[in-house]
Length: 287
Image (cartoon, rainbow, N blue to C red):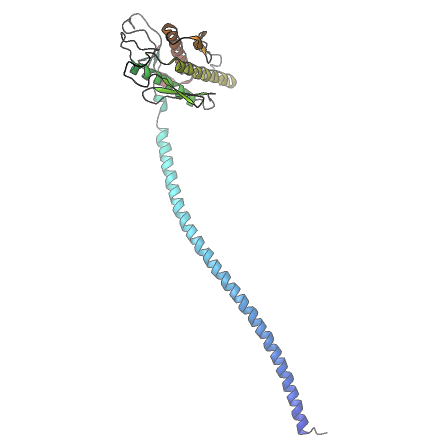
């Protein structure tokens, strides 16, 4: 059986059409794959860009961290140097010579019989005959305030309820009461006749209150810790308003004799305080 040429031609055309259709389908699939690859390539490129940006940021951060680390290391080195220098500073070299005893001829009526701290007379009022003026009294109370501050520093758990002392102010130490009112432990002006001849009685009262609270704290803490001086009490019993059974809130400002006695008792208790808590090379007490 012989196929006519025309029919053979039609068969070839159909075969070519089928092959074309198959090729066209493959091309469509390849184009789809190519499109997917382009999308993936773009996504990977964007990821690479982001990775490079992150790498650049990381390099910048690394460089910044290196500089900051160098600065911190230098600061630590400086701090360690300061700590080493401070460790060689002997704060305990601050002397507190307190004298409350008088032998024969040690004091005369001209000089006046006063307790002293670092050879400065601690007094209630000026005494021109004895050559005792505001400057020396302010300096003596300033030393007493420093002793209280120094002792408080050795007892970090101590905190006064309402009294704070500022020892290194000029011309006299200051006492802050309840964080509001400020009182001079002496005179604001060292010269002039317009001010009172005596230290403000309220300032001494507040000083006594702080001394009493600090002493009670040290004694109570020593009892809890079983220290050797747990049973030690100050020579003159005191409260926040009294000393040696004298209620200072009842004393008038002109009662010089009573206030002078109060100052003497305070000085004795200050000496007791220095002997109680400070090393011997600090207090260097004159007895």
